[in-house]
Length: 185
Image (cartoon, rainbow, N blue to C red; front, side):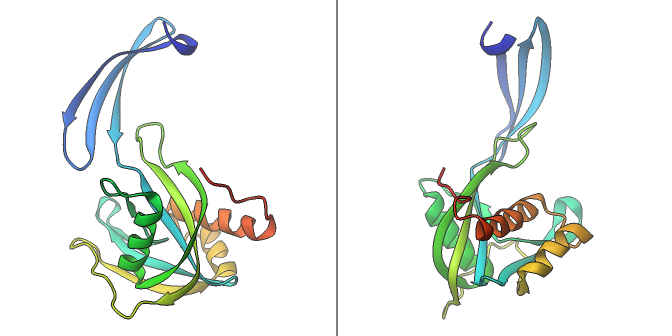
């Protein structure tokens, strides 16, 4: 028996693609359980800051939930890419902006069934790129500037229902009011 009465018996990959699905069998306190686990690459999420009062958000259609969502720009880290590089690339692709990146924190997005760790960045002093990089083929994205106070309001009134976006907006807001709030991971 390993840590705290928990031990892995087996891990079986049932789908292998850009996102893998496996079924884990494990023992916990003498009982055997099976659990589906999604193996997802680490990712990045970015708060593009126009000034301390305004940020850039995107509106994107999400097939899985069949609706448009208001989100921060985000995406997966490609093979051999550092989180910083991925954040710079995703910011350019999804918004057409560039800026200085500062790490904010990192969070597992859905650790009860998913391995994805998102690295959050703040993009400061953003400016429009002359040549907007091309989005992925399946992306339907528009971006817009919103006041931070309105973005916070949207997190409460249901306009923003994407968890990574709610998290990033509040983390950024609190970092403005506490110089020690930001940290590297």
